[in-house]
Image (cartoon, rainbow over all chains, first blue to last red; front, side, top):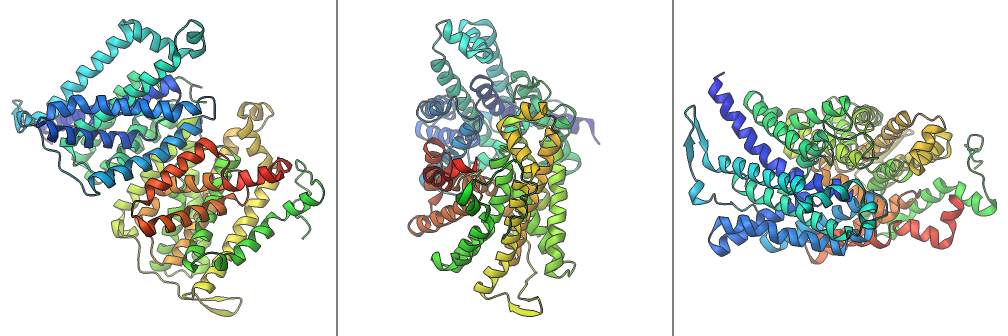
Length: 291
Length: 332
């Protein structure tokens, strides 16, 4: 097998993994802070893709869609937290999961009513059409852009969490919300913002994935399973884990697709099973955290 | 009926007349199911309530009684159906042998998935069971020479079965209902036995306080694995019933939407109650039937109703009813 082909496939895997990282990150941040697993995450990813597509066609520019869709859907996420999820704090940990599961039905069917059940092609922005010569082969410009953008978003997130006052509150709130309240922090507002951020990241993942796969109401269900696998491998609540596991899963899928295409859909689940047998809390998870 | 389990059921005392009535929950449930085809608008609906009722009942053992929220029960429902279909269609096994074979194989599948998933706790368990059930879905999709892939499994029909020397025309919906009801009755008896046994008390202890159960010396991991297998076995029997009923197995049966539907049904009816799963299956299917009469977008209503149930009626229809009547308290 040609080495350059393997390197190209590796790059494909990183692009695929980048979208997974962004999506899983939203899931894992919300869990780390609120202790809520958002089952509607996949549906919100899908809605993000539709919103991006709609806004892009409305403004005539992909870039407006890329910018506005995560913000709008993130705000919608805050509404969901404020109206529905807030009521369930203090109840069984399963309840938010069940509620968001029901919500995903509503969201998916709502999109079917508005946009129809058929898939819609998501045009690649004109600046990023075509391939770039990397010396060893040609690689789609759009995918390189996805990798770069995700890297920038990760950097910004990391700097915000580690170097700013807001980040300090967020990290402290994840560790002990009660103490934060005693110290005079309105933890409800922090949770609202974090849920919005998580949903915004799902929507960003949706817009980014749009041009790489067609947009249809069912796209969220596969993404949800993928995001679950990534967060389980990385360790629920761990940001580093989501990044490492997302890239790992993306690369494994594209590598296996090269050698044994029929196994490509199965490999990530097998990977998850192996990780669970060796480290049930995930690669970067803390033991007992998910009790 | 003298309670067959009274010797073992030390944990549960029967408080007088009401208690005696509740001891008969299997007989009561069978009695209701026996008149169901005449209560519901169509025979087809009644058969579906029966089938999904058994599937959801098996799931209730895991979710309601042990407190493990799995999103992968479709794997066993589907496995039961596929194994039955493959055994009859491909290997010519008679139907009465195909059903136990299918349940046995599905239980092995449940053991494999359970070994991985019961190592995890809390919310992890939900995510892992969903992912592993998706794995089963993709395997069935890829192994199309066995499963028919996307087209579903076809080419097996049970039209005529002999029962105790009696030839029964299985194509007649009423006959079909009552033959399948025998399976449902067996499943209910089995589930009731599990719940009345000391093991039944252990799984409820795990739900109430896992650490305390562990401290009392119970092997929590092993109990979870066993209950996962038992739950899978009962749900797979529902799959066998579906295969016999439809004579095809659609691939969708393995999809996580099916797992989600099972979760919805158990919550609508009432987790932790014996008859709740049948109430849940019936309400879900009736809801689907009624709403899809005037809009194809019935899922938006079902989803919204489910959200309202989670918020305001977490014990479901049957569970709340039992509470209101004060029966729920007597049981606990």
